Amino acid sequence: MIILAISYQLSAISYAAASGSCDTDCMKCHTISTDEVRNILTKIKAPDAKILKVQMSPARGLWEVSIDNKGQRGLFYVDFSKKYLISGSIIEVNAAIDKTKERLDALNKDRRINRSLIPLKDALILGDKKAANKVIVFTDPDCPFCGKFHEEIKKVVEKRKDIAFYIKLFPLTKLHPDAYWKSKSIICEKSLKLLEDNFEKKSIPKPSCETDAIGKNIKLAGSLGISGTPTSILPDGSVLTGSQPADKLIELIDSAKKKGSGK
Image: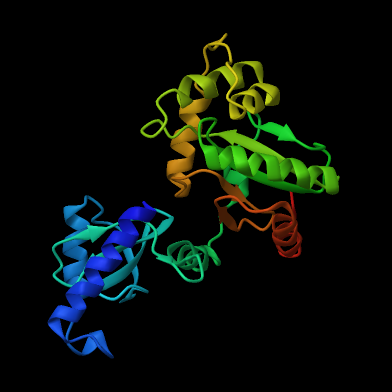
């Protein structure tokens, strides 16, 4: 995805240089209307998505389109010819900053999920179940970023006994075909150890029971606008996507608990 973004930046810059029209303000010569964006959304089968903002992207030659699709906020890029849609990260090379993630974090800053809509009966608990501050985490057993994040939340509960994580298994089956049966196996045993074994690339047994819990989790995530893992719901209902180091995560939780009940 990073290679795609970098290669496209190079082509976009070449395009701008060849046209001789983007030395200062690309918007003087290039425009894109709401109707044109709506047409693009219809073509990619997201006709009901709400357009939040259209602006110039960090890379010249591209429009950045921010949308809210059934509660899920995201963005994509459209080139000046309006023939190509690009998804993926734009990286600022010199600073090594993921500008796309930076923008997504800003989009999700004011997003809230009603935590009472998330049943926790099937959740795996990391930490003390009596902890005052509860964080809900949607994770995929075959997601490498989830494995990395899991190590960080383990550090959090070592440092803070008042924080516990309620882990909901949400396999991204299109990306990880085996994640569904692995999630089912972990839920059947209700075993945090099996999840951690899988993160460590150890073999885990096939499911020992029949359960519809994983299917319900997938449906629930869709209804909440959650499409990626790891995704965390903090005490105030705010949404955190991706992994964070333990200290930063504690800082975010402490900030959120001032706004939410932590229940």
